[in-house]
Image (cartoon, rainbow, N blue to C red; front, side, top):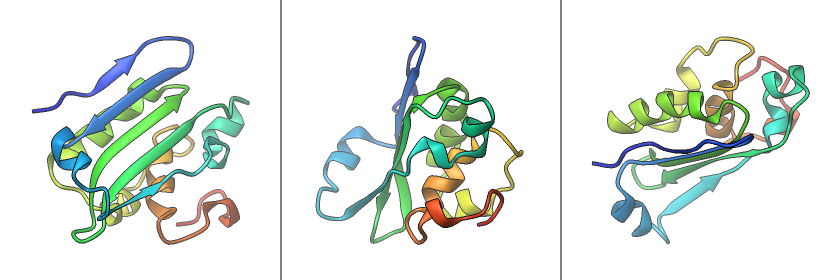
Length: 127
């Protein structure tokens, strides 16, 4: 079993993979979404758009196998990602979940949307 990892510093770094070995084997069968943090409304509201969020998707199954984030409140965001990965969530599961607005956890929804849409072109609350 893998555990969420947090490097506590001014800009928090988190990482959660369902299975490190499994994720590493997906070289040709995975897809990565990585929109800029500035698309997250909360980041703009607190005027701190430094950072990145990344989601790794197993293309054949549509399951999310990894999430990494660098930025404000990253240590708080990882809990949703860890629970989702534990239960085999897909990008649709992240998209369909109603997130409190504005929070940094919305980054998970936006990175999931980024696999099918340009999140830079969305209005603040679109999906």
